[in-house]
Length: 255
Image (tube, rainbow, N blue to C red; front, top):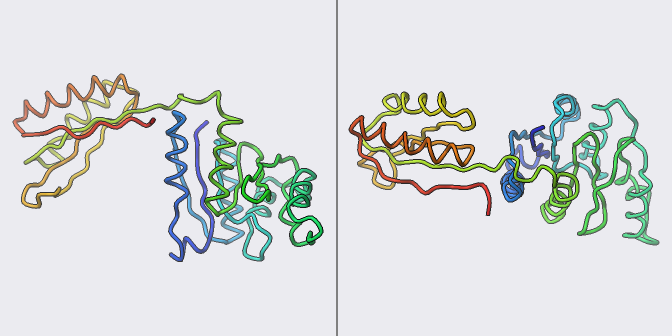
């Protein structure tokens, strides 16, 4: 079971707004010792979105879907989720209670429509304005507005997935290698990945702050214990090759 994110909305695809949900999801998961495995962006296209959700439901991952659960004509996420599962939409009684509590005598059929969810789901409480999201088959659908969506996602994580906390805790260590091309560092990367099964080696070439001196950031990312061992060996291999290097800042995916 991996964690994924689906970010929905034409406003992101056409560049009218910049997405902030993916960086939030990465941080919220990392704070709990978990890790985002994948993310997808989709516009407000019902056919494409339904197909994407069909694939996502079939994978069995935990997925957070951001956006498109309102009641305006350009919101299709609720309908697409139902279509992907082959179930009907219906007014959820808990969602109806929340929406009626929010609007009182100003309730309208259009507002109640925001509580029409796929049959078999549970609601996600919305602390901002009480218009809920919904959960079904390890998929959790929240609004596109960060001030609503982010506390809802954190509530889901803390309520439903606390037993997974710290499962994916990871670390990263790297060095800046000078006067070397990436191809010359491939043996060091292959040696690390071949010996340590819970990490990935990486290289990031850059001109760096001093444009006259190129460098490659060479490092490993994964299980903290293996990272600590692998970076020691990687330093020794680079030194044996005769390339100068210096330490980069270590990173741990946790506060």
